[in-house]
Image (cartoon, rainbow over all chains, first blue to last red):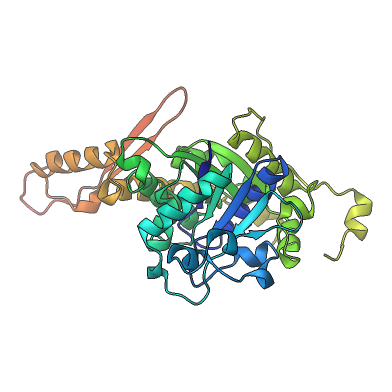
Length: 271
Length: 89
């Protein structure tokens, strides 16, 4: 049965879009039929991170309003055929998204895909609440930093009260994805540790994505990091997170890009 | 950075952790819709202490640390210096 997964955080800039692209591509790489949807109307970026910015013709709002068919708006990834993108509108107002319209589009997508990954906009306004509204599973993206943890706490409260599942007395399955983590700084006491964040937010951990140059390198070239460099530390962490999402038990580690002396001296590779 | 300041450097992560714990205990009680033990305790302790001593709303700080083996509840009540000739705390 299809699963609707929302990638959310409250705070902007913590890695929602990066994580949506990376998780979506990793799921698709494992053979699942996946669509990633951008809910950030007016400030779309998932198309750019996925490298599909020049292929956008119709968008989510066109489909919601009945101006285009779903198949006309879906953009099939050129690298993985079972991965598609439904972009947001760059020009329209976010109020053009209606709850009924979103529900209808998600219903149609459930027929076609195994995973529907919704990239939430920052904030707690309409776009963010609509992105989480019909979710079965939520990935709460959090940086080990005070403002991000606070906003995640707020979003967790909304997932427990304002979603369709919550209103029907069920629960959205919530997972914490800790991104931009630097184990060395955390060990030195300069950054909140994994356990600190877990204790404060008290939702289960789905993965720890280390701070890495690979993430920017991948977005520079318009490729999910899990496709651009599958062997890199953040990619390994995203692949592990996907296995956990699918119910596997995987030991929790923080992968690192270890560089030998040679790598340190000559490691500056251009993207 | 000289050698002394290197050894005396205080870490900032514990400060972040503590600030978040206090803030979120408060915020969860206000609008989160969750019944929160810490927020409820805070209100009740405030009410009990106020029956005897006049204290500020911010004068009660409650921290709860949940551990796997043991949890602790830390209650700090700040009482202002008594006005002359008033009943003691």
